[in-house]
Image (tube, rainbow, N blue to C red; front, side, top):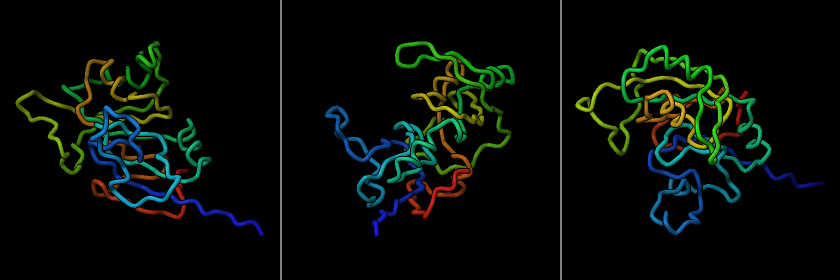
Length: 196
């Protein structure tokens, strides 16, 4: 009888300042923090998609390449809460919804239609290890952006394209999996990743 290797799956709340990788293969980033510092993960573990060093929140890890491919596809929504510089208006929210032009690998790219809305309440996230800034630098807004695509630093580029640079970016949902009240740096092992 064939021995079927059981895949491992994890849900983590990635802290600010960590790279979404396990091996540092760049000399200029020798002192960077890696996900392996948070937990003793098994071999062949991979992050499904990435959050850049300055981004926080929900990240899924797996040893299953097929699962990784599915979650990264446009079949699965990814939702982000974004703190932007200034008081964003309905006009800019509508631009985000309908697509904006951003740069990607040296070429111009129009983002696909997405969901975007102003958040009336400030999310109750734990304080970030590096302070965002305070009120002396002017007002900020929180918005929700939900995408089915994920180009490099896309959300940051989108908010900048409408004149509201991102100050803080937290992914709160991937498909049906939600960040909820996971603590920063918390790792949960799960039997299966139920994204849809």
